[in-house]
Length: 104
Image (cartoon, rainbow, N blue to C red):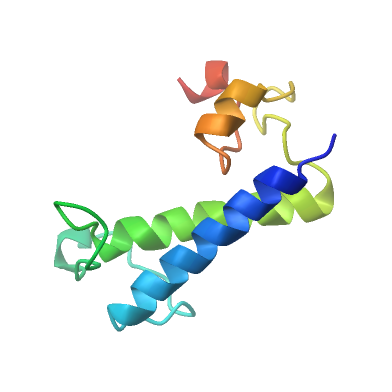
């Protein structure tokens, strides 16, 4: 399977998120705490209700994991059932590690 377009989509979104987080003064090396997310700063310029930084960090983690799966050759396969993830699902959620059935 050729996922070059999806890889490019993921890389562009990763750069966008990294820039937004940097503008919010957050370093990418540090992981966002899983608790106390309401205390995280908000990332400006991410929409009418400004995305919490924790949500941006979580999306960044999902993108990094998807890029790692691309490198390993497991991208496009559900991590639960092992089936191919449908193109329509990956079009909507390119970082998804699960097929639509397992994700829902």
